[in-house]
Length: 439
Image 1: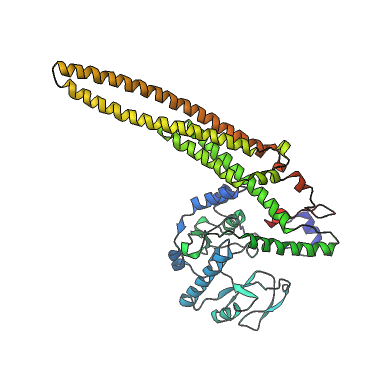
Image 2 (image 1 turned 135 degrees about the vertical axis):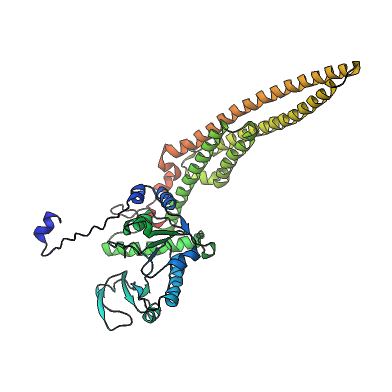
């Protein structure tokens, strides 16, 4: 039943008794209110991936695809359009109304291939003939409508036997996974397609020039909006990049903290011969942070020299001590391996001597036995030193973690200098900030 207010105020309402809820809500319940990583893991676990070639063979008109990036979505739609022309000549083609000028909506629009005019809104889908679709997609107002978008799918229910094909090449937005699950009635209507490598699923990082250009375009649009409202606008590209670098620095510290945590846990679980590798991984994690930050950058990013929450010199000193422990541990482990080989050799000699008789052999047995005692004593000493190295290694890794953790938890402002915070980053009046949406 509609809300009481709607019944009283609306001139007309209609009760729809059709139940559009999903008949198989298991997956949706598993991903509801979960982080992106959890949602995508659960989705991939529930939906086995289908090969690209197999997808093209079993796809049929009426099915929809879902992709998070235009670079993959557009080529996929072109392939589907070609298959449509080759195998489904008598079936209409879905066209998406997407004018270049978004103001051209809620107006009468001529449907391609006909004389019929309809009032259309942005992302509305109409069905036309193949010939009309070929001509329409050459214009700026129409696109192929095989792909499912967030806006065009609102309130849409995909009925069996229609399917939604998720092109899982770089699916990163949680609302896309939830969207796909919400639009179908049964789970067997959902299929996941593994995008081939040649389709370019790897995301290329943007250069600084490309990032500046992208941010500048958004800043120009925001400045135009602010001028229309009579607001001042003094946010610059350098301010955004500064905040972005501060975020990246914090992410690097968090990564180092996680890697050192794994190394500290491994100290108590790995075999003795693997301690050297554990120490190397911990040292590598810190070394990457050392090469990330220079002394000048630390002074600029982390505030004044008198109250620096992240002491790079201290971390470097801890790393040098860790490398010393690593060297001692490596030497002890190498000596242990060498001693084990010598002990095994002397034991074989002793076995051979025991099988022979005579005074000379008795003298040889005593000499070998003494040699074995000496080797075993040296091995015990080396083993004790190696275990001491393990304790020192654990302590050193924990000290390095504490140094990084202090920087992470002292204050969020520790990654941005006090002087830089005094600059007019935000617009006045109102202090309405935009930088996080620009990164």
